[in-house]
Image (cartoon, rainbow, N blue to C red; front, side):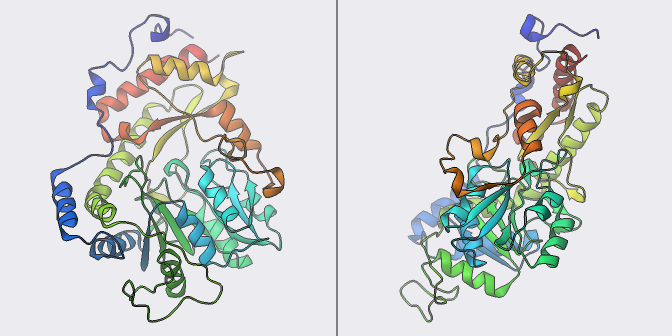
Length: 406
C-alpha cells in the first residue's frame, strides 16, 4: 500500500509544532475560581462539611440525577466507602474488570474481601456482563463496572443482573464525568456511583472524590463513614447520634478548597463534555476507512460520552508480519501524536503487590490481548481543540497505519 514518508523515517510530521499550540494545559485555571479560593482561605472555614462542600455535593448530585452526593478526599476511598456502606466484609467477593487502575481492585482488599478479576468486552473495554454472570458465587457481594476512558459498561444488562441476583452495583465513574446513558447520568444507575477528581480528570481539583446515591439509608452510612461517624446534620463536636453498630467510620473528609474548584469547574463541564464528544465523533468518521484501527466503541446506549482518554484499538491481524504495537506508537509520536497505553492487566501492575491467594482470576483473554497488542490512548485535552486538529490527528493515524498494514 503506497503511503507518505513517515516522520520517523525522515518525513514531515502530520501534526506540526504550530498546530499543537492549540493544545491547552490541564486543568485550566481561571480568575473567578482564584477569587473564590481566596475568599475560602480568608473565611477560616476550610473543612468539616462546610458550605462549599455542601454546595458542590448538591449540585453535582443534581447534575448526574442522583439524590445525594457525599464528598470525600479522593476517588480511592469513595470506592472503599461504597463497598463498606453496602456491607462488604472479610471473606466476601467483589467482581471487578481486569483492565482498570489498581484502586478499583484494591477497594475490596481494604475491607478484607477478595477481588474477582473478570474480562471485558473487546469493543468498549468495559466489564463483560456475561462473564460477570459466570463469575458470581454465593460469596459475591458487589459488582464494580468501570466506565473505562469514558466509554460505558452495559448498564442495562448489569442492572438487570443486579435485580435478578440482589447483588448491588457500584459504578466506577472516575473516567466518565458528564456521561449520559439512555437519559441517565452515569453514577446514578447503580446503587452507588464513585467519582474521582484527581489532577488529570475532566473534572479536577487535584484530588477529591464523591459517592452518589439515591438511597437515603446508604447516603447516611456513606456520610458517617467519611465523617468519623457524624451524621449529615451534625456539627463537629456535637454528635446527636452515633453510627450503626459495626460501621467502622474514618476521616475521609474533603476540603472546602477542593469543593470550590469543582463547583466552578462544574459550570463548564457540560460544554466541555459536548465538545469532546463531538470531536470524537468527527474523528471516528475521519478514521472510518483507515485500515487496522478504530476508536474504542461508545457505550451502547450512550447519549453523551465523557472522554477521559481517547482510546484507539489496533487490529493485530491487519498489520504486516512482525509489526508491533510499540512500532506504531513510536511512529505516531514522530508524527506529533504521542500515545500512552492502558493500565495493563491490573494483576500485573507494578503496584499490585498482592499474593495470588488474595484475588481470583476468573477470565482475562480480552484484557491480555488488548493491553499487549491493541490499545493506544491519547489525552482528553486533544478533544478540547477543534476540527483542524481532528483532521491533523486523522492524517497522522492514516499515514502510520497505511505504512504498517498489509
